[in-house]
Length: 423
Image 1: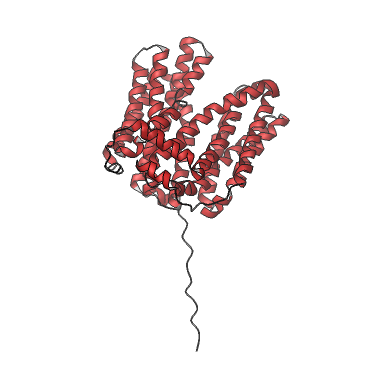
Image 2: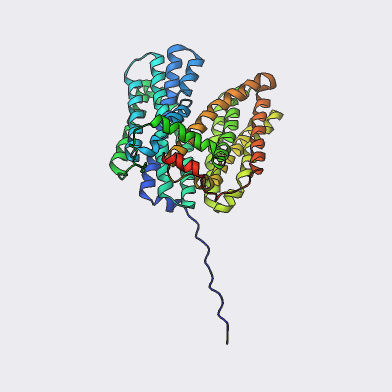
């Protein structure tokens, strides 16, 4: 008599990018996001060039560039709860509509520089609400590893679309002038708004225990942000995603000065600037496509090390070819964020995820705006290469900090965090 062998359990099949893109609702959000990032890059660079052409001031031009990023943190703090309290289709379509109207105003109305900066700042203030609503839908429609790959696709789309948008911006300004280029960006945003309004299913806002969706938005946003930052697992996961990006952005802000101080050939800075987003594309593709979920999560610290260690190499003042390699490697390290996505989502309350995703994005934009200011302050003392190396050291210290964590990815959100999200 033979003994039957135990049934063999087949390994869980690996999720693929094709399967993620087969979800039509995610595909719509993905494509409109890609168009939106192209339009954003076109608007930001063109408006900055327009301000410089009108004033000759590098400071005002830089302020025009940064006006689309820095106000986002205040928008998340003051308005973030609306991402969970209003219907997501209306929010996302309204966001693209607002961006389209803003670009159209900049293109068609000859306004003072201060008024133009105010228009861009208002859009940035509202951005966390729209992006939070979109992030909440992605988390709702994609489960498990599909969610992580969805985030990977969004990262790659943002990097590629940003590169294309910057290139398109320069070409459009040269070919048709800044005002017509802004009109092109406005048309792209309006196209996204129409696609979301017509193709995205109508979904109700999350229940809020009988409270009216619009009441007390400021109070609820501040309370929700305080609860998120006061909950240790969420707080540390936010900073784990913010800090490495801030340090690398600080080094990125010195690339032009580094190329100039080392007398690289004309135009070299543009090649060096492109290395980080190209590396981001490659890193997300490799880590998202070929590594399994557990491997991605084990690679978080090594990938943050990969962000920082090449930047430390700039202390030796490498030449142009080696600088290209170092920046490409640093860009690949950005894929560390894929290994944090499941843990971050598990740490969030069921309600209030939209505000959390808005805070993640707005905080990231803010620290990437502050990074070049902080790192640049050291360049006067240590030189550009030394300051870039210092930024790399900051990323390495972040990796060491993450190693000290007690990894508890399955921990449930605390009662006060859940209660605040529902309040």
